[in-house]
Length: 165
Image 1 (cartoon, rainbow, N blue to C red):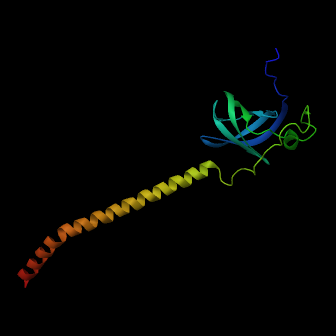
Image 2 (tube, rainbow, N blue to C red; image 1 turned 90 degrees about the vertical axis):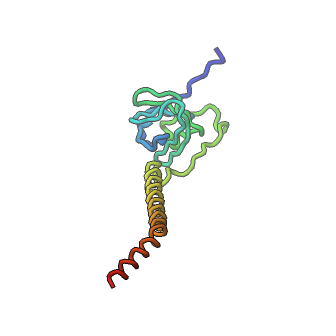
Image 3 (tube, rainbow, N blue to C red; image 1 turned 120 degrees about the vertical axis):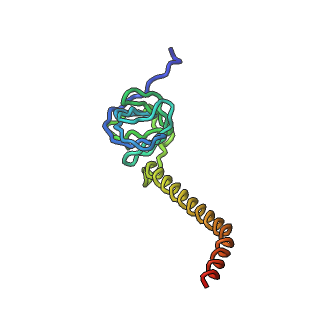
């Protein structure tokens, strides 16, 4: 029995966050949270095994989806979550040995632009590059045709001009 995993204490929450998976950012609600994970509820959440980023308020974490069911998923975070800083000291469960756990590591809030904006910018740049390549191809084709037909057309023009004179 001593080899069994002991489930970490959970704290019920109702925090709105943004979660980024392969498809971009989506909105979610954190329903409960522990020192190393959380349960999220929302639409379009990533599936099991996907790596995600979670951003909300001063919270910015990375983790992996460990389970996923209709409209819910469980995420195991890479960093330890400071529950007191996130939900307030009165809601966070006490830890067994203060100072024994590594300090939580957070980065600054979410990037200024969601991934979907980056994809839109990438598509716009691709479109512009395609237009530029088409214009260059059309110019190259036009100069080639002019080079091939220029001399015979000049000869025809000069013969027509001499015939009219």
